[in-house]
Image (cartoon, rainbow, N blue to C red; front, side, top):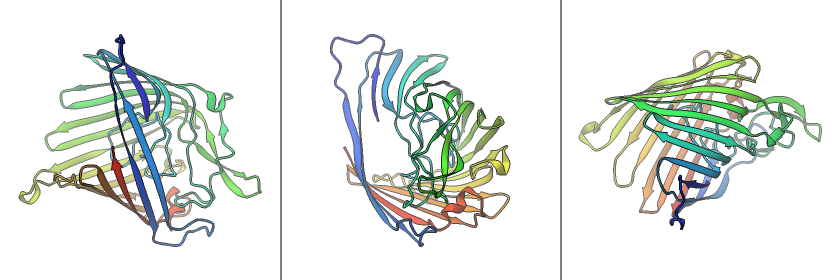
Length: 356
């Protein structure tokens, strides 16, 4: 992420900012042979992400550059998070995002924060290639994107969001108008005559609400949206709770119990596995000097036996190093379910990062 944050009146000299970031090595080990023999086996990668930040004055902020913005409160699906494009090569959990060129004006007042966004330079979603794992069957051909807008990836998108809190309630109300970050996948042919999926980026309008209430040891969460531009207007939501048992077994550790429900009124026509699903999970925070944490969750379709099992754990090693472990397992997804392409992609991932 690279961003410039400025205030109302710039002083004569720009104050010194700070650099931060990390460099990370990662290994992914698969437990089965791939469904498509062209797909690879185990893999390794190396990544780095530097960041520079500076600010001055008060009252409002102007950010220009390539940045990341997060909206949402739910654990198992970030339904309303729409500013940045998803990086499916990095991970299928849709939490890894690509930087978005933007101009963002934030008006900070007693009645809340109003964020205005102009978003030039659309970025296409990244999909694993023919040899990649955790990809669709057939693969997505990213060399043949389709756009509903004649401006294609040069269209300028706009968004506005008001966020505030009242007592125990935190909320955000937003509207986005522009090119959808979630492409519809249509069947086509590659240059070599192979059946592939082509990403179609449609122009949408989306209004959304994210809401969180903190009631003692309970967190109550809701994300809701309504969207037009991808067929008939539809609505979707994810909502639930997290209850935290503090100091379990007379230790410093906390254990959280998570429950969430997913609904999409397109039903089985929805191009997402979250049309009628339940997620249950446990979050363990050891509250030790190494910041040891773990999250385990199961997402189950209420209409069939499709399930996904997810484990994420992390621990700091010394002052600058962290190690993370992820495991993802898939079971019983019927043909046509978005998860059926991953039926042979159970895997364990280990990463080691040095922060600076």
